[in-house]
Length: 82
Image 1 (cartoon, rainbow, N blue to C red):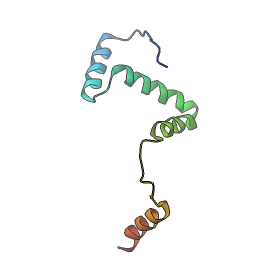
Image 2 (image 1 turned 45 degrees about the vertical axis):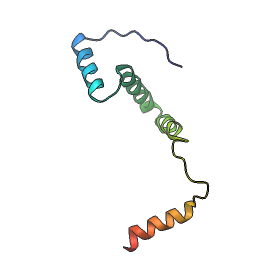
Image 3 (image 1 turned 90 degrees about the vertical axis):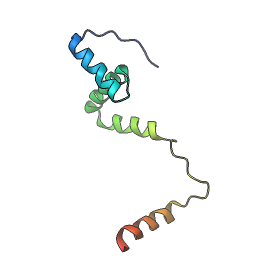
Image 4 (image 1 turned 120 degrees about the vertical axis):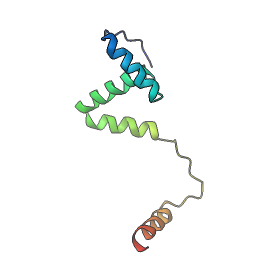
């Protein structure tokens, strides 16, 4: 759930941050939220990993007949035998 937050920040910093956000295709709110999330995660290192895993979970759709062991074996053969 998102909630509005009012901050007092130097005008020059705001303009530079807006430009950076635009150049990177992100929103200023997103930049601040990610910064705060990472800052809090420094105090609780596992929480950042858990959040990132939760965000990635379900993003990749594998075929129903996907064989993990075969894919790993094939990858390792390619990497080490050729």
